[in-house]
Length: 165
Image (cartoon, rainbow, N blue to C red; front, top):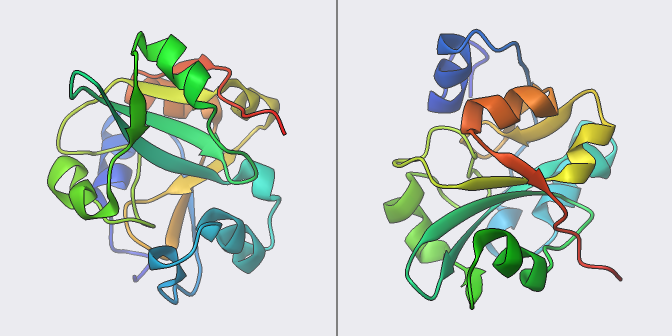
């Protein structure tokens, strides 16, 4: 994507006067078949994978949708996700449902600019970094943003989401 082409996520940040940068990488479609795409993004950009935050969309037993931002190096603890959302059950939505729900495809899902504003949760470890990387809304492009600015732009809350290994 040319650097002058703005995504919806970028337009939202600009409207809110939130500073950000972008970084592009060669997308080879690996998101579709493999877990670990966010780690591959970090390798391609030559950055710390702890600073790449993937966007995970989940649904609970009442069909409510929630958005989680978690570091590429960690998995979401479903017990913690249930607790923070007040859900009895919660699971990721199927990749084929993502476009209809959010307007984004797997590997290009941004927590910004979804079709609807869903309750959003950012793993609290994001606060350890001056900047984190999130999807710009298309495969092959990342937005570099301060965690507190992402929190403000998405009306998110910080919480502990890490699955202990």
